[in-house]
Structures are given as structure tokens and as C-alpha cells.
Image (cartoon, rainbow, N blue to C red; front, top):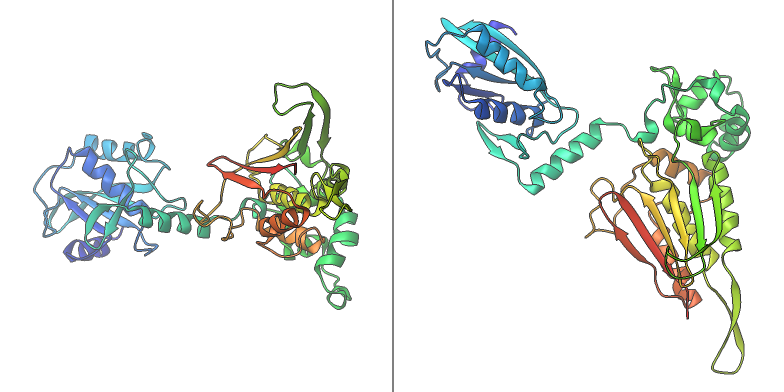
Length: 394
């Protein structure tokens, strides 16, 4: 901390990066200030400063800054009252001719930061509690700064854990124009990195790379499969008629689910008013395809051991995947809005031909259900899982 910079900040009464206090004991005030600076609502991306033993006009109060006070201020970082933990420094400084304790707080990479369940922010020179709209802004900042799960490096893996032939012979030919492939003599890691399947800085595949091309993705992502159970009745209390696990790499799962749509379709004739028959599916394959693809592309893979569940009852099929609505997609906006938890996986599904357009899966599924004479699917987007229910037409 440079003395000249600190003294300049002390003199500025309008700064959103400064809070002054004469108190040496008001821990709530200290914590609220630290929380507000960590949230960096003005998005200055610069540290904020709490000056303890300073008057409102930036002069020293005359109090003695003891080692005990410095230890108490430093302990705020790790006492668990401000999650996530703030990044901060604490120093004793001689400023404007007197002693002060200075707490330097850096903007958090994971806002919103809270103290006692409240999100404090800076609004100009004052501190305030964030509104819901302001919390949304903070959450969006977090997503901008954090990479999506599928783009993060998978440090437990290396190139030997990937089926390179699947990448070069299958994916590249679908994702990159043929003329661009001609003469591409870059090393394999750079080719993978150009499509976000390898992290050059970390020197390892990304999560998407392992999930798509891994020899054994389940060893690193134990929940990355689909569990199908068919019951003899309309509840899980009934006997199990069939169980199936659909696993492997991401491409294997997508292919098997595509075939599975036809297996469970169960086409049957239905009499029409003109005494003719029309073919109706219990579960139209094109609708189920869209819903199955949505479940595996948009599920939460991050530290989840829960598979996508397909429960098949006598009157309906329930598709449940871990992870609720993501990003700025709210229940009010669903299903019109789009926000991708796994953008690389979504892109891969499109390149491989399993998805036609982004953000259209649910609307397409509903159209195919209507054309079949089925009720529209119902959806329950909750905080930690997403449930889609498709009803068998009567």
C-alpha cells in the first residue's frame, strides 16, 4: 500500500472505494464495509479501503492502533462470516501524521459476497444493502468472470486419457470446414485448444474434452450417465419391469438416447371419426429426442454424482436432470429465454447433428407432441433439478 495513494483516497469525500471510521470495535461495520468492497458494485475492478481510526474528513482520530486490533481485522477474512472468503490485506499506516489501520479489499471473483446473509454494496460514497436487481447484476458479473464448467481444465486428465481418433475422425470433420482442415499441421494440443477441448496454460484437457473424447469419462465424472427405469404402474412403489444404464462418452450417450427414443415410442393405431385409423405414438420419438438432448446437454455436471433419470410409468415418462435453471434464465422467462450452463457441450451436440438450433428444444418438443395428439409436456424448473413430464395420450 503506497502512502501517497492512500492519503489521496482519504481526502476524497465522494470515493466509492473508501470508508472511514473512528471506531476500533464495531466489527459489524468493519465486516459490512469489507463485504461491500468485495462486491465491487461500481465495477471499478480496483481495491477498496477501510480506514480504521480515521475521521470523516480523513484525519487521524488520535487512537492507538494495536497489534490486537490488526489481528482482529485480519481474522475477519477467515472467520466464515463473509462468504465467499474475501481477499484482503491489513496494515498499520502512518497517514496525515497519525496512526490508522488500513484494510485493503480486492473485488471478488465470485460475487455476490454476503455478511450475515445480506449483500452489501457501495452506492457512491455510502454503503447499502443490495436490491434483488443489484444482486442479479452481481451474479452476472460472477458468470462473466468464471468460465463455464465445460471450459475449465480437468487437471486429473492428460492427452493419453482421450480417444484422439474420435476427435480427429468424427468431431473435426463435423465442426471445421474441410478447406480449413487442409494443411492444418498444428500440434494436437493446439487443435484441441482451438475448439476449447484443451487448456494450454494448464496443459490438460478441459472438462468438455474429457466428457466428449475421454476413454473413461465416468472415472472423473461419476454422474455422467442416464439411468432408465420402467415401472409396472403409475408410481415408484410399483414393481420395476426394466432397468437400463446409458453411459460412455458424451457422443455414445447422445447416440444411444437417439436409438432409445424409437424403442419407447410404441406406435399404435387410433380410430378416427371417419372410421379410419391414424398412427399415434405413446411417446413421439422426435419430441422425446429433444427432451433427452436437453437433459444431458444442460444438466449440472459440476461435482454431481447424480445421473439423468428417466422414469417410465404406465401413464407418463418423467425426465429429471440435476441442476435447475442457469444464469439469468428465471422461471418467469422459461421457456422463452436461453442461458447455457455448458456452452461447449451444446455446441458439440449441434456440430454432431443431435441438435438443430440452439434454444429451440422445448418449443420443438411441444410442437411434436401436439402433432401426435399428446398433451403438452409439463416442466418444473426448481433450484437444484429440472423435471420434464410427458403424458401418454389416452
